[in-house]
Image (cartoon, rainbow, N blue to C red; front, side, top):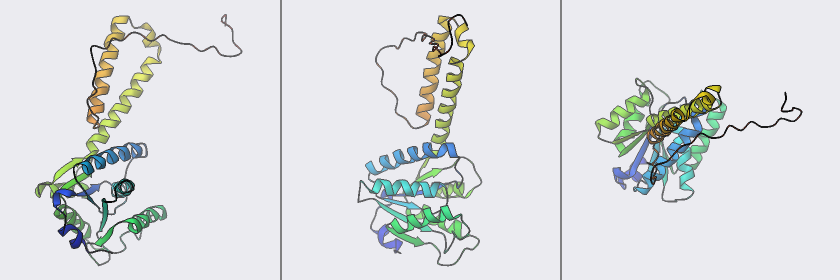
Amino acid sequence: MGDISTSLSQTEKSQIVCFTGHRIIGGAETNQLWNITSETIKNLIKKGMQIFISGGAIGFDTLAAQVVLRAREHNPNIKLIMALPCKNHEARWREADKKAYRHLLDNADEVVFVSEQPYFDGCMEKRNQFLAKYSGVCVAYMKRGRSGTSQTVRMARERRLSVINLGEKAEGVKVMVDFEKAFSDFIDSNEYDKADEAFTAMLFTTARSSYMAGWLAAGGEMPQTKGTIQYSRPARVIPFRRGTSENE
């Protein structure tokens, strides 16, 4: 266990990042959120961030802390601090979540209990106040209001922290993936075969613009292109199946 005041008193707030986010993450979104969080942390490290504080909850707090540990493998100056709301707040968790939690505590640079008492009403709010008080940047995974996450984000903004909401970027990724699937389904349909060249040229141009918009919303960089891209209708290839003939 460590004394939080020791580490934070020697570090500028501008170099300290806290995490806050929802406990429930959709299964299909986990990999996307991991990649977005990893890229965000890499960018913050490049800007001089050195200390990352996780509130120790299930869901995004755990995912973000795991990403920090991965980043620390390549940069020993990075520190992970677990700021926990109370003693034994994981008591009713599933065993798999407890195992991930213990792994984070064992590998964190410091573990601090905001309150030394067992769970009590208000301990989570005190933890959230702690995160906002000692940080300069708040990385959130917030997709809805009226939650502990939105409370922490509000506290962070009141203290004039820079807030990065990955929930918005995750939504951008979902829109991009959904659009890609819908476009692919259209290409595989008979409607594609009926469309004329002018329509397909317009369709591909629209698809590219829409895909680019989703990519930018997800945090991607604006692609660099030279000249004008011309689209032509791809040839429809019908595979020959064994056991059939052209007359069937």
